[in-house]
Image (cartoon, rainbow, N blue to C red; front, side):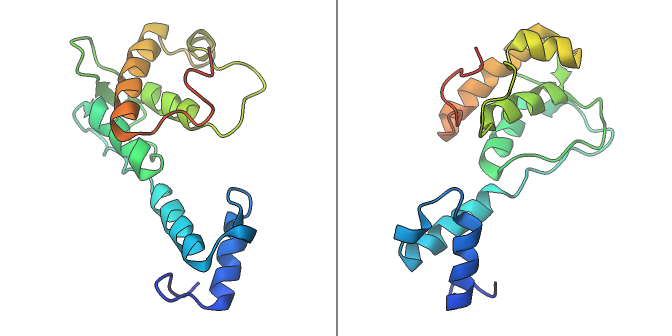
Length: 155
């Protein structure tokens, strides 16, 4: 694809093929196709990963970036911590990553993704998952990014 500002007919066919699974491309105008593709591209640029040895990440800022930037990159330090700003201890940033994945899921998993099950399977404390979810709910409401499968679908 050369340029979304001035797409060729071939470019528009590529856009239709890319968006076919998620948009009614056969009924969309060329301008609607280009707008949908631009929006899709903007959502797929992940938030940057914290660098090795970084201080605890601001959980609210990190979640905002992950929800508005279209995901996140794994931190360089697998033990990166996040401060939730709730007066509690820092938590493993991986907790927030798991919660973002659950929040952004496009399909129901074969087994429920309850906090308890995630805690059992990951070894992460259930209280950290719950604290992280409270913050994620606040940030998601702030940025207008509700769970794709419905509010609290995993419960």
